[in-house]
Every structure is written in C-alpha cells, then in structure tokens.
Length: 339
Image (tube, rainbow, N blue to C red; front, top):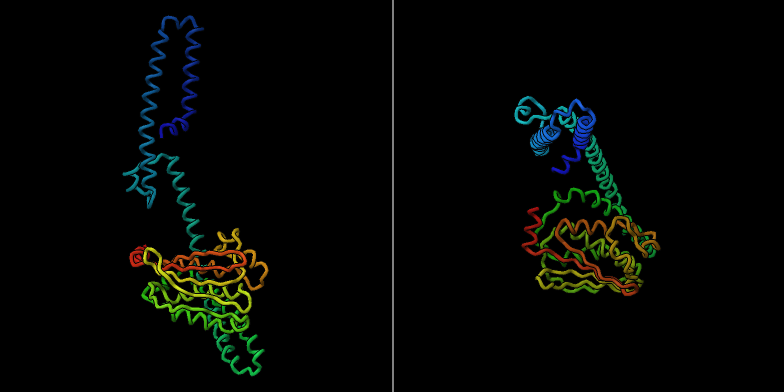
C-alpha cells in the first residue's frame, strides 16, 4: 500500500524536489542570503514534508481501506457520511460506480427475463411437438408394409431423440429444481432405454448383451435415463451393422457402483477424447455423419455433474468405446445435496 501511495503522489514529491533544489540554488547564488543557514532551511523543509507525507498517508490510506471495506450496500446519505467521510473525488467516483452498476443490473435483469420467456416458449413448443409425435408413433403400428414401417419408425426415433435433447437442454439450467435423488434400480431404466431404441437396433442389426444389473444406486431416475439414452444412441450410431453392445456393472475399490456401456464401433481418436463432452463438438467420426449434433454427450456430461455421476471414457480407434458411469456414495450424496 505504501508503494502504491508513493506512486500516486509522484507529483507531490517532484514538486517538493523542485522547490528544494530551487531554494538551494538561490541560497548559493544570492549573496544576500549568506547570513541564513542553508542546513537549517533544508532540515526544516525535509522534516515538515516528511511529517506532512506521513499524515496524508495515514489519513488517506485509512479512508481508502474503510471505503473499500464498506462498498457493499453503501449509500451516500447523511447517516453514512457521519460514519465514513469521503473525499469529493471518492464521492464522485463512487456515485459513478453506483450508476454504472445500476444500469448493468437493469440490463442483466432484462436479459434474464427475456431468457426465461424464451425458455418457457421453447418448452411449450417442445411439449406441443411431443403430442403429434406420440400420435404418429401410434399410427405407425397400422402400417402394413413391414419394410416401410421400419424406416418410418427409425426416422420417428431420430426426430424423437432430437426433441428429447432440446427438452432436456432447456431444463438443464433449472435442474436443481427438477431432480430428486433416491434409491433407483438400474435394470428397469436400462431395459426401458434399450426398448426405446428397438427400431434403430433392428435396422442395423444391433444386439445387446446385458448383465443382471441387480444394483440399486443413489441418483435421479429420470435424469439417469437421459444420460443412458445419450450414450446408447452414440453406441448404436457408431457401431457397425450386426454388432453387439455390452452393458454390465461392477464396483470400484471405494465401493461405488460402476455402470459400463461398451460398443465395438469406430472408436474415438486420442486427440478427440479430451473434447467429446464439449458443446457442439462432433469429432472426427461425427463430421462424417449428418446425424451428429455434438450435443448428446455435452448434455449428458452436464447432467451427470449436477447429480453427482462421473462419466469416464476409454476408447481406441477401430476397437470401440467403453463409457463408465460412477454413481455417488452416501457421503458424496450428502455433499452434493448440501451445495
């Protein structure tokens, strides 16, 4: 603080040095001043300036610390002026800062209102779209041409997944208000998501090898289903025809449950692995597919982090990928809900 104060007062120090030098020059040139002790004048000037400098340092730095320490919620009214005295420049600066903060807060509040309105409209639109999608799905059962029905079901599934992604992306900002962590059985959630991908799997000849999945985990069932859905859709999308996706569980050394989803697809290049959870990142394989949006794993990762699930990936090009979900333990769950 002292160095900062000295830097701010370079003009004072410079002016004092100028006057000090000027007086010494005058004393040496003017013979009429020979009777006055130059040392007496120099010492008087140095002592007086030093005392003045110390006084201003103590006073101004004390006010500055008080000013900076009381900025939160401070208003320049008479009651506060008795407690904290500001210099005219500080008062003018503080009023300017208050005005800027007020204007920016107003802009921020307006942006929040617009964003909330947009989010509400988008949610309403998604719900409106889901109604005809449900109707179309029911009508597909009456299509007699099996080949045509399979193709229509596959396209319906793609559209359904895109709408579902948009719905959960819109809800992601308020997930804290829309989750409920409790004991959930893995088996019904995984099997329901597999059945939801049935049309796509039949078209590509994708099969599933699923372990018993007897574990019960601490999580939110609805959001867990969304995470599994995104990983399964990626596994099916990038797996070759007539291949198999393996799903099994185990426990890590800490006792936490691990859910593994393994495919034998294209695999993820090493340079893509650190970025696969980034928004809109499609990766090397995604650029070759018009179906890739780069949003699935991004949303799954964000949802997982908010409900305490960790996602790990192991992959080699040409050998497939292994996605692992690690569910929180009881003490980790307590920390999560206490945030």
